[in-house]
Each structure stands twice: as structure tokens, then as C-alpha cells.
Length: 205
Image 1 (cartoon, helix red, strand yellow):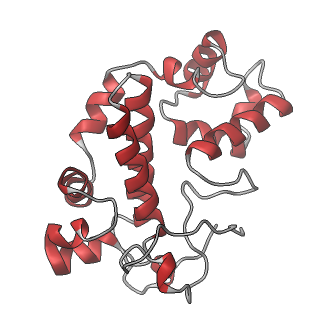
Image 2 (cartoon, rainbow, N blue to C red):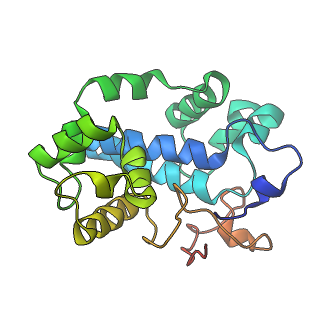
């Protein structure tokens, strides 16, 4: 598990940046599967990356600077800022609830490498999971290996496919989204500072 500035804090946020970014990634995947506007999909993915790399808890930014503080982050417009505010305050997002209800998990799983419709149905029925995040967890904790048809090679392909959507490497014990591991990272790596798009870092866990 990656240790971040948030996990070292004595007052960890109730909703972490990791959880917020994970939610935005899931929204982008569901939007893509349902044929939404590509620009909208890209906005959620870029927003997720900004949140993941942000070294300051968004919950703290919202509390101290309001929704305007969220909009000051690169790639976070008014719609994304409002969505993040709902995630922090309500611990859920109506949009995500609607998207999850708009399509069966079997169809979502069948978009992952090496998983066809029949196998996707088997995974959903046997493990009772509905999201890519849950599928990834099952691929790492051994549950997915218990599903008939899920051999080691196929499970590895699932890990790599989902890791690619989350923009990180499929290494052992991965976090849900990439977060910076260097607490002394310079300003170019912090979305709260002006500058270019944060460079990608190799993560160690």
C-alpha cells in the first residue's frame, strides 16, 4: 500500500483523494461504455488524474476555500467541482448511481481484456461484484481465480487491462489509483501549483 501525505496526516480526510479519483475513473468508464460524448469522458479521466496527483486533500481544500478552491485545480471545471463536492459531502454521487443502473455489470466486465460475455456473467453471479474496482480487487485477492475459466494468464491480462484504465502499472498490491510517493515532490508534480501537466512517476509499492 502506498504511503501518502494523506495517510501520514493525524487528521486523515473522511473521503480521500484516492477514493474521489477512483469514483471519477469509474464514471468515465461507464460513460464510455454507454457511448457518451468523448469530451465528457476525457474530462472525468483528466479530473481523476489531477485529483490523484494532488498532494493536498480535496476535502481540506473544499473546507478552507470552498468550491472555488476545487476549480482552481487544473482540469477541474464547475461540473467536476460540483461532483467532487457531492462525493465529499454525501459520500455518493447520483450520476454514478444512474450510470451503474444504466447497464449490467456483465457488460462492463466484458469490456476488459480476455473476458467475454459468458465469463463476465459467471464472474458477476459467483462473486457478486459490479464495478471495475471490485473486479480488480478480486483479481488480486484470489477470488477471481476461483471462477471457472479464469486461469493465471487471463487474470494477469485483467489486472493489466484495468491498471491501464487507471493509468498505472499492474504491479503487486496496487492502489486503486496512482498517487505520488515522494512527499518532497516539486511544484511541477502538484496540481495546486501552476505549471505543466504533472509528469508521470513510477510508483513503488
